[in-house]
Length: 102
Image 1 (cartoon, rainbow, N blue to C red):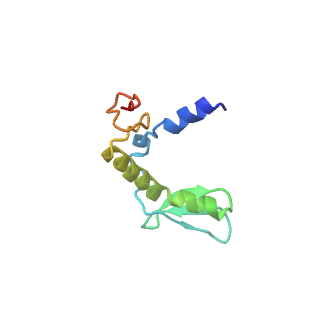
Image 2: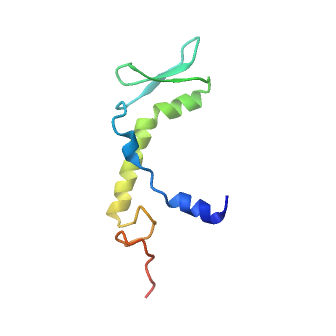
Image 3: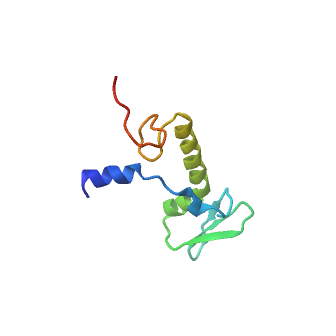
């Protein structure tokens, strides 16, 4: 992958609307004696089955609602500090042009 491709990917904003309607958190996980790990919601209802015994993968999936909340929080902070979420420049106001030095 070229450096230009890396930079373009780094500036892409994750479309959070694709996650609307997900099962609300917090999520937790259970590791049964036999079978796959499972992720459950706060009421113990099934959310997902993880087909590996790697606890770290299961913990990551269980943390998804918290991670999504953190992304949303950080996007608001960036917006409040006038950092363009499209291009990364300060004070671009949606025009996606770098500030000129005076």
